[in-house]
Length: 282
Figure 1 (tube, rainbow, N blue to C red):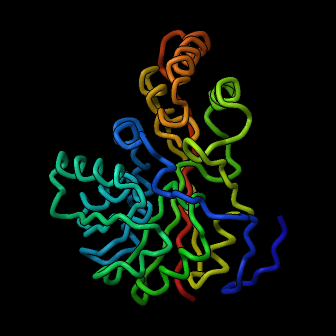
Figure 2 (figure 1 turned 60 degrees about the vertical axis):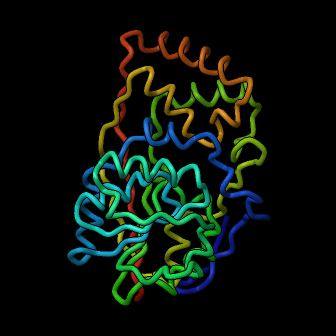
């Protein structure tokens, strides 16, 4: 899709409608997300902390169970985690308690584009949106964040895999199995089709109030056992237990069989490139 946006201007997105139930996209994913999603690369956490003052106040938006926010809390940040899924927030509270971080994190259930209207939300030194920006109404979210990010603060869009870089080598196998059991369309949870963003995240950030951009890209390795890789599929909206329903057992049986064939020793490793897009006001 072409765009003629200039810094600070508007980017037209191809989304034709919003998700009717954003909190339901990741139904059934909460516990699996906490157990099987990998934490972000150390270079990502270090880079974000380098942008922040000491003892910062950080908003983890569309936080899930706090996969990134809790790592920042362990390094001294005060975190507010906001997500549309109460299930995810409940898992976040559990995880924070296990890590001794209950006092460092506040949890709020709300759609991302309404975060500026939450009672007592206050202001923030930085906002992180990790592996979630593609689910959001990005323009509306950035406009809302402009109201609550302090002068000199930032918005950071974090992805475990930089757009356009190579996916995990087993990704085509997963796609074929999803198509076998669910059909060709990517799903946004049990009842909704995925709406692909029309333009890249960096372009959207550059056209927002946070138009002064710096980008980190960092290589790192990921490794999974067979059980972990199967469990990881339960964390995705398009292959969650709620989405697969009665097909889950058959899907996971086929997945285990295929993975054992391609990797009999049961260890699955790959090199990925993380991406962090940090936008400040000009």
